[in-house]
Image 1 (tube, rainbow, N blue to C red):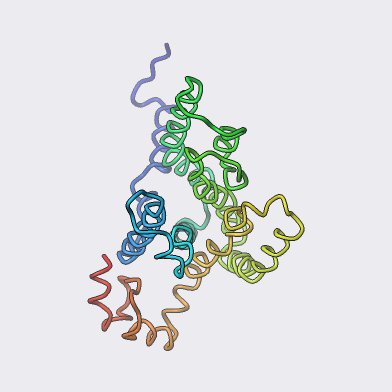
Image 2: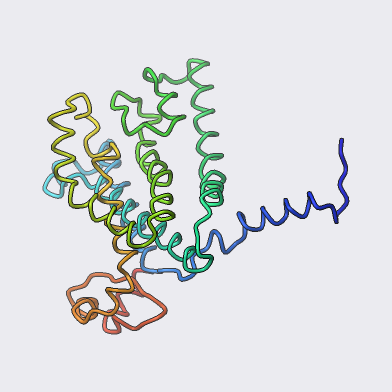
Length: 277
């Protein structure tokens, strides 16, 4: 066993690296948006309501048929929030340091998500090995590689991992886009993703019929929801300077608006903001 003194250059480098990657500021956004907590709560309620429809004694599905798929609506709101927050963090890092540490970003995502997720998959794998649960073919392969959103014949026990797979694919691609394209390049990529979304979905449906069961879950068919959040983060400062945007936020028809510490765009909507916190 090798022992290092506290003043060892090796230990000093390790401390510096850990400080850069795991410092509180690396995890905490510079300005929190409280009303997003309200949107998260609404999204969770929609997902829970969607799943509860299959519970015996609960309201029948026909009671919600005119509202569409509430569960997928809730997940899509989550995707937009994710695109907004991640893009905001990346842009702030560029403004603060002049660059983006892709290594630091991926390490933070790894330690935030991978341990709990893979612990769950390990438990499921052991239960399947001991014949306590039944998994579909290739369930574990798709789960371990975060590609569950391309596996339609999955079992219930791991099926919910499709949305996490979408998030991980976004985390893999988007930071590099912002790092190399900066704000202008990221704006173009996100705008193209939104504009081409209908064509991409139609092409997937007609040219890749085997992927039809994953429509609405495969990355290319949901990337536009993430891109909308990215666009809002990129254009946030520009929007704050537009009079029509200020008037829209102050409108009594707005159900909820994101609060921001740098301006008072929606004073008339403050009660609603507080209610959404």
